[in-house]
Image (cartoon, rainbow, N blue to C red):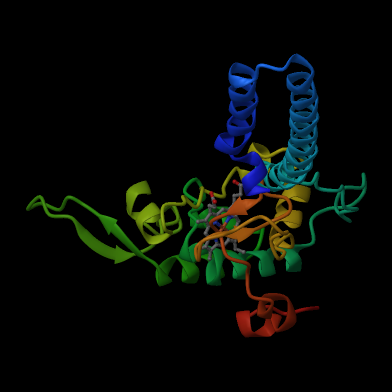
Length: 249
Ligand code: HEC
């Protein structure tokens, strides 16, 4: 194949034909040669074309597949039958409480909830006293004091949840360039909101053939573009919920 596609081989055939044409004196003999030569060229051209189109075909097929895989449209997340979406139903408070535990123990390592105050937990996931105790577990920067210094104190109900990283640059640096977005409004910021989030969190798979990932990239069926900088969450979250202080009832 490489030889057939070689430009020199092809032009050599044509050249030889012209040389014979120049030096030949016998018309019929020359014709015969030309015919033979032409036939050989035709054969070569055809085989090159067949070979080239076959190669191109195979090449285009794989290129197409890998391009599809690289820039493929993410799968559309389905619509799940959430039991709180009915007219006479409401949010399940013990599930919300577990949600907070998951956020606090796992997602908070990387994602902020920067618009949420500790008092927002009251009567949603926790009682007032519990929310106060949770706030006190955090260290919050306050100040300046009379001497103009900033200081650290335990959190209060009126505080916003402290950020896991001081700024976007620090967050990116710790996540190999990918930015873990703030999760406060993520449901409203993505098409199909909570269904998308649920699909995303369960959507990691092995990459299909032709997609190569670096050590810090993962393949997620529902993430736009499919290549995500967030690692699959440990299945221990779902398998051992009590390890995260979650009660499954
Ligand atoms: C170790 C760090 C880390 C943890 C822990 C983590 N994430 Fe992420 N997450 C990331 C990074 C990094 C991105 C950005 C990925 C990208 O842009 O490629 C991300 C992106 C996301 C996105 C945005 C996807 C989009 O459509 O843009 C959501 C939603 C998300 N994470 C939810 C969660 C939830 C929920 C948890 C906890 C259950 C969690 N993450 C835990 C690092 C993390």
